[in-house]
Length: 241
Ligand SMILES: Nc1ncnc2c1ncn2[C@@H]1O[C@H](COP(=O)(O)OP(=O)(O)OP(=O)(O)O)[C@@H](O)[C@H]1O
Image (cartoon, rainbow, N blue to C red):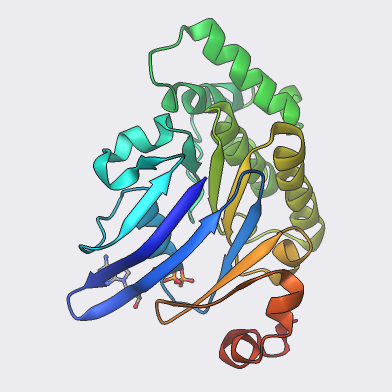
């Protein structure tokens, strides 16, 4: 589904992403971890075409060369993301937020009724339908995060990319969010690529983990393999697992 080959991104003399290669298959949930400044967000921004990588980098999504498409076209191809900082429109209702998501990902303009139906369906899927007419700004943080996912889901994606969606949540809320993410994969067949600092959120949910350190991909394996990887433990996990 997503094929990343030799992706490199430099800022001046700093190599933020250092010749990184990996794939994400249909129906996989893949986590991306690494210490602060490891290059995780830069890698996300490069894949979603917010940033342009160096010559020699290759990013293909469902056979399409993403380096050939414009930033706004990425979502239309079925690759939709959330951002590290919650971007819910507080002054709009929960439903209006989801409708904005539904219209964002379409290749042609869809009528308001179709967008509304798709938005309502996403809200129902994530347990937010009863709050549809409420101002999104009034939602507690955990439900704002679920709304972020509803917006992404309403765009009818094949792959969603989540940037630290579990941050700021209590352990119970994290568990609920992880369950939603598993349901999105299991019931919708959508693949997930997920940056996360909270190990408990991802260790039990992901099929595979990628570990970045100083821009380099130092490991790519199942959570069990990553836990047992001496280089990873030394570089990052320490006593966290
Ligand atoms: N626009 C930019 N200009 C210059 N340097 C940047 C820019 N964006 C990121 N960097 C640098 O690139 C490196 C990777 O940063 P990045 O934000 O991708 O790391 P990260 O793994 O997402 O970190 P965090 O976990 O703190 O979000 C860091 O050294 C950072 O300072």
